[in-house]
Image (cartoon, rainbow, N blue to C red; front, side):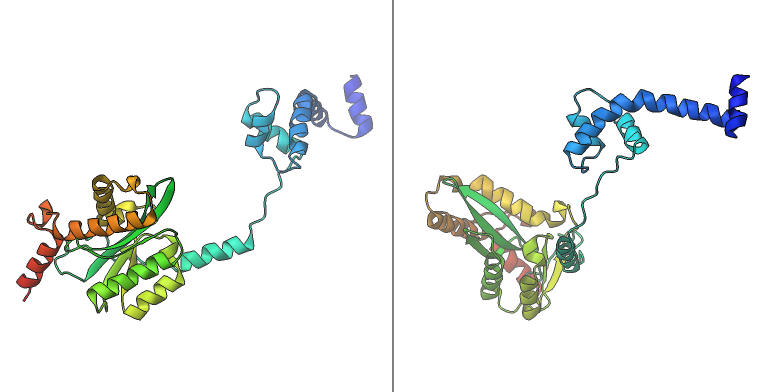
Length: 272
């Protein structure tokens, strides 16, 4: 009777009063946990989300409860603004990727028409060297390469120059790579255009799209004791010797047990 009278005086309904009571009780029940959460939240200057708060709490608390209390008491996490320069850089990289024209068509029978390329690292004497190579998919021959002590753009530009010197005209030749920063770089792409080449790229995160290069690097690392070199020059000469051996002396089962150079000459003779 007293409650009904008070509701009439306050001009509120009984149901509204009881809803308020329930909400009030719940608020009081959460208040101690709210103080613990707020202490961590303030320590993070309002930047902590529920996961970071959960990790830094002095007691164990379910993440759903943390989210509920944050929402209930208005603890809104500050969202880090996107760096516009990073967005521009990301967009520029996305703009320079190319279509996957090769589509894993690794069975080629015309030499000097379809190449793939990649870079691998070679640790030696507590240092790193980098090996860039171009492989003819039809013959398995390494047709261009460069070993470097750094990963600047010259490693791929010099590889292209090596390719041009070894092959000659590269007009309408397809070259396939991953989406690494060297191959999306305008300098590399402009050099390809100058040579009249067609660029193809693997899909993001699909190393199998460039399987011929992965295969060659795997064989090389199994065959060559590059880690035993003391100087970069020793390593460079060892890599060059291996390329010569691979092209001219190492027979391949899938190419009629011929070496890459023998198989290249075989293909050229059958196409006359």
